[in-house]
View (tube, one colour):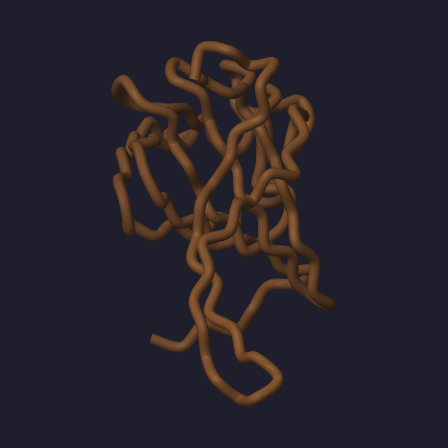
Length: 146
């Protein structure tokens, strides 16, 4: 995505029921994106959000070559790539690259800035296509059972 002035469009299938109780599928588009930081001082990215009490579902498109700044996850959140590839580098130096369907749970709130000025994590795109991500963000830390 070289033209940051043009908001992205994400296509999806909408399964719905008509008045007669018959299910249908329609191709729809998510078009309501704003270019802004998800957690300042992180670099701006295309962000579209759907809200539900206690949780927010966001779709974000990280342009080709996008690399953010060091920041914490603003809230506990699941992050799932739909297309493209992205990376997360943590303060311990570990860098993980994730592609379609690889799930990340971000809960690095309350980190302390290190001697190199790093706090939280650094993330960005990998490769020659934008990374389209779904983010499910929670007001409080969910209970996870494995």
